[in-house]
Amino acid sequence: DAKTTQPNSMESNEEEPVHLPCNHSTISGTDYIHWYRQLPSQGPEYVIHGLTSNVNNRMASLAIAEDRKSSTLILHRATLRDAAVYYCILTSAGGTSYGKLTFGQGTILTVHP
Amino acid sequence: DVKVTQSSRYLVKRTGEKVFLECVQDMDHENMFWYRQDPGLGLRLIYFSYDVKMKEKGDIPEGYSVSREKKERFSLILESASTNQTSMYLCASSSASSGLRSPLHFGNGTRLTVT
Image (cartoon, rainbow over all chains, first blue to last red; front, side, top):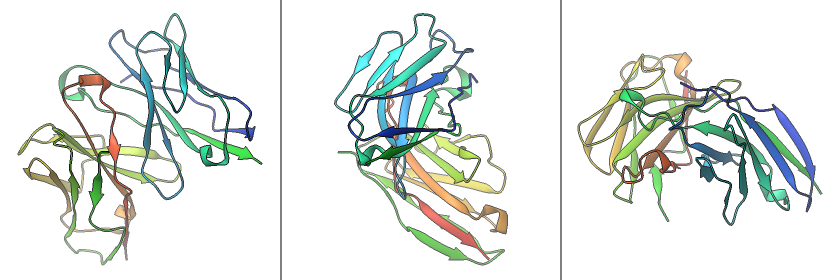
């Protein structure tokens, strides 16, 4: 399965933009890039996903490199409620791995008031 | 909104006991998953199911089994609980209609302690 690499932790100030990077150099042509976040004492929460083009939704934006070997989750104005662990994940296609998500360590985002 | 409900938030069991963790989703999702989450190890997939009575092993199925008799319910079974199964257990579901694009919807987890 293709793997992702994220920084262990990042910090931001409230109301500033946050760019969370993810490397996935072994991504295959059919893999989707998903981002989830996990707030304390809760299960992970879906944030956004994409394949090739940049994506926007009410929570965040996803910028995908042209070669698809990396992507960046963008929180346009961080709030204290955005403090969480952020996971960058690839969906695996084919065989018994179809649809299976593999979660790595994620990035712990700290937001300062 | 999709709701994934795990029957217990906290559970304490003794070594050797048979443990059932229940998960119910209300959105008619075909896919259901069981993960465990441990500090430093992230989320690891135990088992998943694409349909009623179907199951597939994940990355760490040893010591676990699952049951999916109804579409909305996916149970994780620890046949003989051991202390190394102390963990946070997370259930998730997703729709099969969007294939690889389908987001997972997670429950809030069951923190199991085996003493």
